[in-house]
Length: 557
Image 1: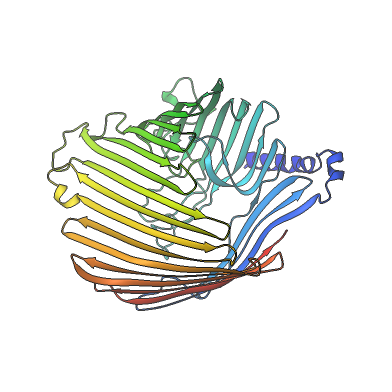
Image 2: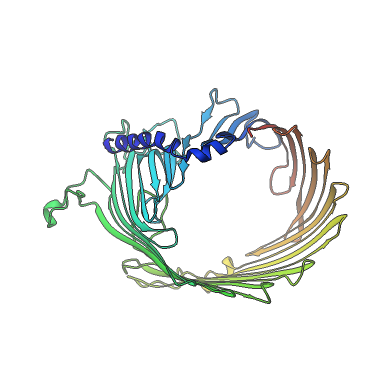
């Protein structure tokens, strides 16, 4: 808490100097030193359904804002949302509010904010507190302190799976480095801890325990000439899963308790990622190696995939003066880095994207991807019946045409996609193999002089799995029109799809959408929308569903 108060005081003490640090000459030239920009919106929505249980409440309403206050060049963005849904709530709910004013090389954070210091330390986790980022010249500094998570007691009236009990968690982070965005070395330290006294009610038979985490990270990036860039990120994480477990300081020499109190539930793991990028006029290559040990965790990130090793190559080739572009990628991944799992899973991923645009009228895109997953023996011998071996291939071809003149624009896009899942296990392939076909065609014609247009689309897809073949095909159409130089616009679209299961008609889905937008003067605008959906099926219940609403927006400047 002392660290949080110190950081908040630092931010507040620097804020007045930040607001009035700009050159007087520039202040005098600026005719509007104080600016308030953004949008405020208010809306209401209605929902009705027949045939099935409601999937949304009605009526609903919302108030929202996304704005920024600029004081002598200092930007202070903020946003808010207030909503009420259905009749079960009799009070509005407010979103998290925070500001991040900035001036030249200084940026401050206050309230609900998130900061990104490195991928393995503090990686965008939201906190409620204060922070600072400074880049004066070659010196790089960042710090934050605040609450990462609010305590939540166990409540028998709520679903414990969706609203589990959690301890209050606070943390702080420091980053110091030298260099610029293109060439730098940063040292990052992150520390977080759960408050063991923050919960009053624990779930029955709970395995919930408070934890603690200390992470030391290094981030570097160097340009080796004009065409080669080296980058690296790494971190070592001490993670204690249970603060109630016995301390282990007596077993470690020298005594680390001044830095971190290790316990028998403490684990040390590391993560690292490094690579070299080559960039030339017609050729680019990105290489990367990543290794994350099992049980590596940081309280500064919401989720981490660990126990993996990745090697990737991503070349790009451009030919014919940029008209022909080929993007490819190759990757190898494996787990079981410590050899203590019963199996080792390997993945090979390959993909290629070819784009050819010889002129403005015609172009074509082609894509291919392949993923192979296989398992080999780890600490035990796998039987063939449970051994995982599968190959997924995907092919896509999309030619497109465009005809343009002073009066109209016509566009035709055709796309075909084929995907195959091939199970290599002879005991399960009969049930797991799957093939899918997708095909779409769309044509749009927009009349520029009369500000209106229409479009027409066709679609078909086929899915074949064990003992089941489904077909779905349909069409869509739409109209759009603008009036009064775009101050009034309307869009109407309809679609219908039929489906077959094993050659027998299953049902249909029909929908219609209407959107109307009206701009009053320069700052006021209204929008009205409605959606009607009709579903008929022999397998499921028939239903008719309607959603509609009205939205008002005010642009501040």
